[in-house]
Length: 182
Length: 212
Image: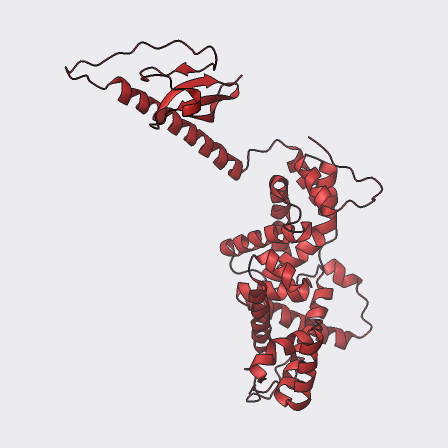
């Protein structure tokens, strides 16, 4: 092995790290015959000793009840939401707005489809399905069978916190019905 | 809020303290602070070369602990390494705001007055070496300084230092070795070969010859 290949192990060895048996034997054998690496090992040992002196010399100011008291005052005070929490709330709100906009666009595209004669067909809002609790969205063509669509649960911000609702998406990808989660 | 109590253990582990901090337990916070303040302060002082700046960093790091405790995941890290990671961010931020920090000997006059010198000359020499080394460490590029401070001064393993920095173990090892070589050059003011055989004042290092 060349010096260059062994230098990392020589440094770790000089730092006093435990090498595995074969690597340690290789380093020891190399150091017996290589003056340059022996000098490097000496330098690294001296460096480690100097760093240990620095580490033990480094004084930190003693524990201070005043500093801890200042931190505890912050701990006790009501804190604003952290930035990450604010971002996640913002993202939820943005997602909610997107869903609402998507629903409204879906309703408009269905409701405003002109007939062949150029007259917009107005579909009366069907009543809630008593079995499933879904209310058909205004303008939706028909309430598909529950098992043929996809139900997505969304959470929307409200004055009392958040409300949850299930949105029934038809196979054409348009929202068809909605129900509030009790 | 649920407070975790470990029955039969006088010193609850860091994971329990952090979980309790997340639940709003001020005593857990105080205990976590007492346990780790000195280590974080030393780490910050070594990184930025100023004990005054280090105190600010400690304060900011522990304020961050209050908010970050809920996101701490036991098993991914230890409490101490997690705290070093937080402090490391504030060290980097502090350096961006105040790139030139004091390298003065900030040992308080009160502490010096209480020191009894049994070997005044040797003590002066020792202090000069330590100051020279401290300056050389602060002058290192930050990536190498981090490796030297964490592995050599805080005595973390390569694995723990890599977890704190967020890089591969091999990267920490090579940064440490490179940092030590740079340190030897800066500390001793020589290029690492026998071309400049005169030792620089304050350098305890032996002369190193060129590698084959």
